[in-house]
Image (tube, rainbow, N blue to C red; front, side, top):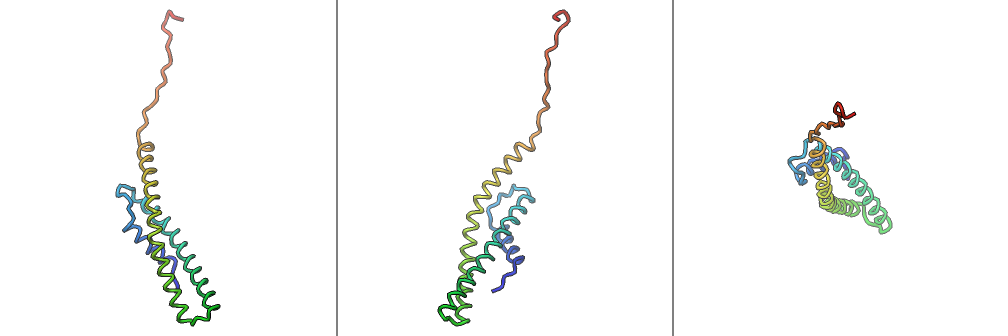
Length: 131
């Protein structure tokens, strides 16, 4: 099974955009950056694990004298299980990151965009005759 990394990342990003509980009030650029960053990380993780599964099963199949057809079936099955587990695990982790990022965006909105009052320094002025 050959997986194109760009296609995998695009597919993960599409799922994230549709299913992650990102609040609607997030700015579009924050939403896009979040999805892009974590879709890229997820794609790298999945591709790495898919390769590792293939290597482990191939090593085991060589020692166990399993046919090539059975080996291919086992690899495909293990990869499908991996993808299912990765989807649910990653989405759970991202929910916590979304909450954290939401708090950060709220703080930025409150503290970075609030007009700051001009500060005036009042110096005591000596009245004539009090010098």
